[in-house]
Image (cartoon, rainbow, N blue to C red; front, side, top):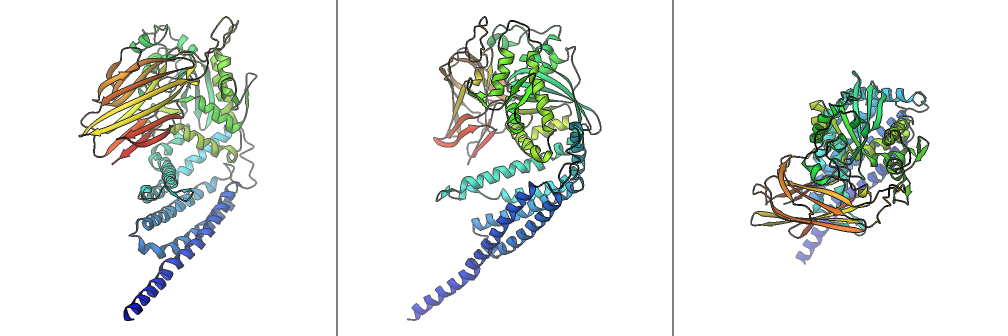
Length: 608
């Protein structure tokens, strides 16, 4: 009986202790959490009302309620020796720092809210001209950036705490809810935000300078047609030169790339790559100058020709863009008319692609019985029209969406930047916005395709990649399998009939960049002799293949990595090619799938 009484007393003590130490705190935390969720929804709605005073008030309310939630949460911090509670505590502390960063941001923009259209009943900004809107935004940005150091430090402190959370210790699913993937997504999205405020700080602080706050800046825009894929994203189709001073921009010139080539009196002989793989080209032209996947290296080749042009203008930076930018801007701003032609982002059944892509190709590439003046310059005109649509709307209506989408396109290399200023260039390279082939101490893979005289076949060809790594006795063997498929019929390429030759045999110059010192075992699927050499501090395996309409092609490589590549903690960096999107990529390491998804950004895979 004494033993029974003892156990009953112990159970009662545990029950009472559990109630006061766990269950009661849980009920209070849940109650505060519900209040906080409701407040967060109200804050989100307040953002859309364009009223800085109302936003400030609601943010203060949210801050107080978060403080109450944090206070109740401390009741279970004594359990921080349990990993899940430790993660919970880290998230609470990270949220506290983010709230501080948000408040600092609101305080920074509050004095200038009327200038950027963020004040109830304020119309002064909306009524201004497009040029004045951009100028106002730039001058305002300069003042807001005075507080960037404080804001970025709060975000950095939040990142330190979120980085401590390990998603792998959570189950993949609880019932129908995906738990682990949700935690991974939160970390990935937050680290993207942190990169913008912390890693990009040197670049962000100089944004007013980039936009010509103190001195006029000149930029060269190069449009790359990714439907005719080249090393840095696409065939150089057209260019534009614009100048910007104190936020006021003017287009100095917009023309097709052939006009620029024609302004050069003599062109050098074609290099080995063009002579060997291109069709009927014996000279090096600017339009073919983007031969290297490393954008700064390509700029060197571009400049070697550009300096000879009678149309040359000294520039402060180069911005490369591809067709996805056009599609995204049309989705945001709606249909746009240029030269009497309507362009839209709607799907065109003739190519199963956005109408703007087909309409541009139809306008530029279809043969006609008369001379089309500046036929490729229509791209520049369309970009010009879309830009002025962007700054013509109220900022609260479209600017947030536009900035988010353009930042995503920078991450996915549909926009790339090059600056003459070495410090600015270093900043964008640290953000991976510069199209740089990265230095990497472990395993590395970059697959680069170049369409030489294959019409616009990349509009129809899909590519999938399988990467297989085998680690055995401290030796790493790699197998890379690349499958190309074109399920669509051949276009009518009869020039006399005026056919629009889009889908034709793809003549594909292929390069695979791997760690320096790798040794090739086999290279199957190339129609020409394969080459091995070093470039950009990598070993390169080179070949050539063709993909026929309604046909397929396959390339398989096997190679060993240098002994300096670590085997205990294996890491693989995959750098995607600029201008590509939604390519399927599967990574296996010792027979286990480590990644199986589309490759739209550079991807680092780590296996301990």
